[in-house]
Image (cartoon, rainbow, N blue to C red; front, top):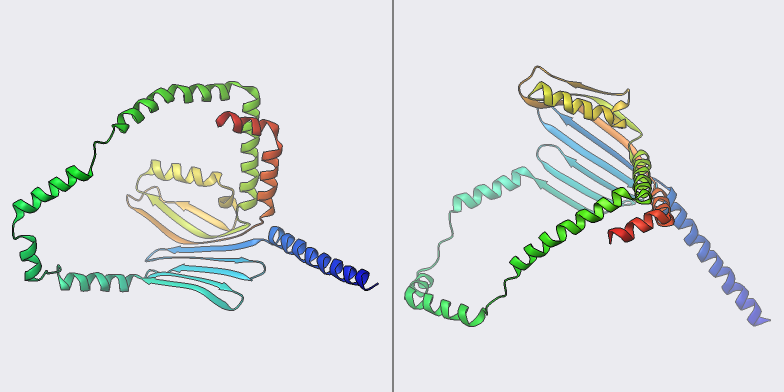
Length: 270
């Protein structure tokens, strides 16, 4: 009886541990990583980001305010990492080095170095000849191998593009990537931005590319272009808020490895 009760207690403890591990795994996969990115441009540039995970258990904060960078990592209320790099301190250090001037060597060292330069050069040449054996010419061989392998790689690419199953595999991969990007893209984007790239053509092309990104289709984000300005500039402010769940990547990896056509494509690429 004592053995049975001990086994029951051990089994209950193991079940509790497995349940806690399963619960922790579900939390890691389904609780989102929240991110908040903001920036300002005008008289000066300011930018920053906040990332939190597991309901604020892990927090990362970064900021650039014109004077330097500031990065902090927190777990609960404990600060694990902090790095402050200000531009003022960097400039002060550079100015001190410039004021000190080049490092001067003592007279004894200069005498030892320049006592007999001819003999020292002869000794160095002798040591190099003794240490460095004749190296085989590998560069020429590698270039020849690359030239020989170039038509093989082109032939493989042609076969991949001609094969229907490989085409379907590539289209499946693109579909997975598009679905991932849709889940990763921010939920909200706020702000008002006006920019110019110095020429109407470049500014129009940039505006057209931005209009294809779903984030810039949000009504709360107003993006304007200045086609008349000859200067390159960006004015305004923007804030992007979103979340990422890790189970999305697990599902995408499982789908890729489950698809036989994608596995066949990977074998062909190898």
